Length: 352
Image (cartoon, rainbow, N blue to C red; front, side):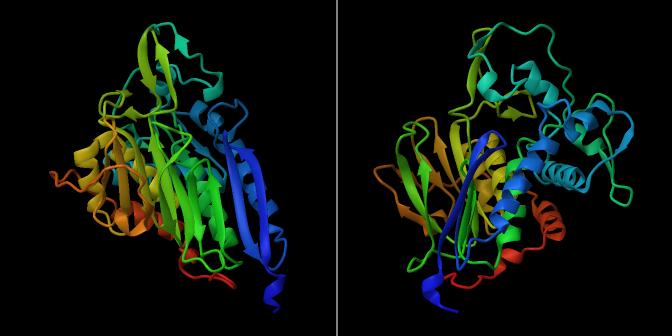
């Protein structure tokens, strides 16, 4: 094959309330780019909680009785329940009513920045995810009465993983969905993809850059999706232990892992745990590294995160030792890899 025929092909579109960008280095304009576009739109249509015609909305409406769902929705629910179990409920997809009670009851751009105090609080039952029943043979999901799902915390990363599986082997590519991304192979003459991490305090600049290949990167932050409710500050990251927006000394957490779903879930969990417990929890997970930015502007890395760092600018990177928090990730990672075999372990033609 003539190497000179290789070149960059890209696609940019909006889905799941974010900008999705794909860059692919290959020998042809691969039709799979448009397949991925359709994949995102289909996942959004089925998994959104804001559309009364979505399959997720219909599932939530049927709580209290089993409902047969599409393979796409079943897999997403199974992954979300597995993630909740692996994090001992710190990632919890059953907090929809809590989200609505604090004012996140519509797509974020439609939320009023200052809302009146709500009436009665939503009933809060921690650990409801453990009572969801899944029947893969019948493709049925049973939500206990009163339990409703919000898959916004996992659906985007889960879709990026599916898209990455679809493109694996074609050549180096980067799929970036609003900062949750997968980097495959490396651009020509490069050792990996150069990824900028936005400074949560100064969004117009990068606080550091990473060099990654065959890795997922996801960031969870409470610096952006914020509003007022009855004069009280609110954000979208709920602590399932309290049913309230998480009180944490972290403003953002970035995680590098081998799948985007894992990175997304672990970043949210570490952010809720806070700097000390979150860093040590990430340190206990195999092949997972993280960068935690505190609310006083410090950046704290896990033991191996510096292996990915390209530029640190003027930020202080502090390696600290803290008490170990609760663990548990093997079952979640196993379930993820069982459902979606890791085809991303090899590099395709021209992958550098």
